[in-house]
Amino acid sequence: MKRRDFLKLAAATALAGCATTPSKARVVVIGGGFGGATAAKYIRMWDPSIDVVLVERGASFVSCPISNLLLAGFSSMDDISRGHDTLERFGVALVRDEAVGVDAG
Ligand SMILES: Cc1cc2nc3c(=O)[nH]c(=O)nc-3n(C[C@H](O)[C@H](O)[C@H](O)COP(=O)(O)OP(=O)(O)OC[C@H]3O[C@@H](n4cnc5c(N)ncnc54)[C@H](O)[C@@H]3O)c2cc1C
Image 1: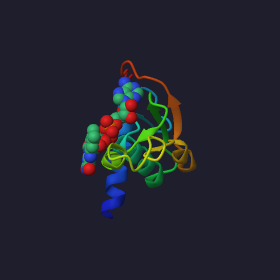
Image 2 (image 1 turned 180 degrees about the vertical axis):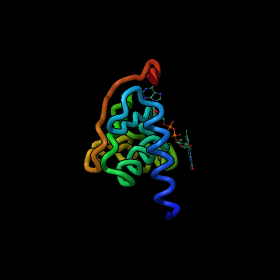
Image 3 (image 1 turned 135 degrees about the vertical axis):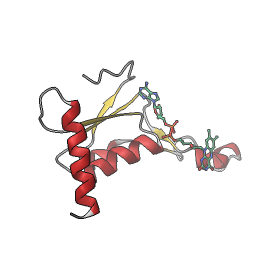
């Protein structure tokens, strides 16, 4: 068995074990910063059969690493901000709201 196949099987087994009714795998990612947006995108690219929902409270993604340009007056907030809608191209469903808790069940 290839390493990739093993990892897929291990992840699918773990997800199935968590679900009360074994059904389609579903991942909810809270937060669409570098970490969350990257995780959501790559889970979908890895296995498009997994439903991925991204919950983000902010209206847009703001790139802190290029904020020095803003502080120095070379760019605006618009320049360093991006929408999350490109993630929808990868099949990530967006929920624009604040997550207030996690109910794994
Ligand atoms: C001024 C500044 C400059 C920086 N410069 C650099 C740099 O040059 N190089 C570098 O590598 N790093 C830099 N960083 C650090 C870098 O920006 C962070 O490490 C990175 O943004 C962390 O990404 P993250 O996805 O973990 O978290 P965040 O970017 O903090 O994303 C978390 C997201 O989760 C959302 N969220 C949180 N709670 C909830 C909730 N309950 N419900 C819904 N949404 C929620 C937030 O709205 C946010 O969009 C800088 C940071 C700052 C502040």
